[in-house]
Image (cartoon, rainbow, N blue to C red; front, side, top):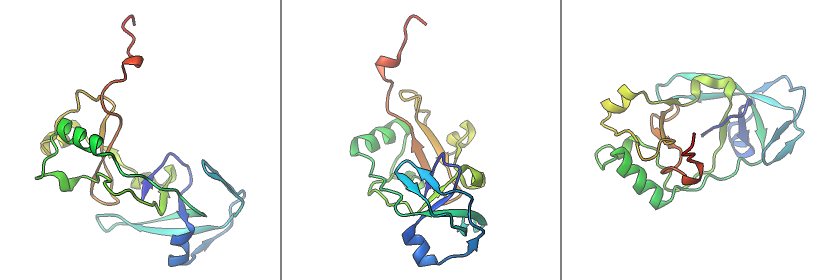
Length: 166
């Protein structure tokens, strides 16, 4: 499951075939995404169970393929572990994406209760995680979907973006 900036929730055709349909009235238009256009106007109910066993019922559209999310590189993983103080003791709290994944659902902005929220400073300190001072764009997020912490952002600072005069 992947969070997205999309407005509409989407599932891939595989999930729809496995779960079957729970139809809603058709949408007025097809759907357009970064990988193409789907003129199918069918909408369905989709039920997701969060890690706290709360069930969210949402509208969903179906598209053929949601793509592939490749694994994080070893270099990236080792760097974030060092910078954030991720150890063998707390590594199980994170979704480090070491294998890659085929997403089956994209959660859109209309389902905001399922999207990730950034860890507060208090939460980070309580988990004994360091502030990523060498990588200011790195953020730690929690999501109700799997109770794992997600890390986003880039390592370090791009020297081409530093403006010394301003």
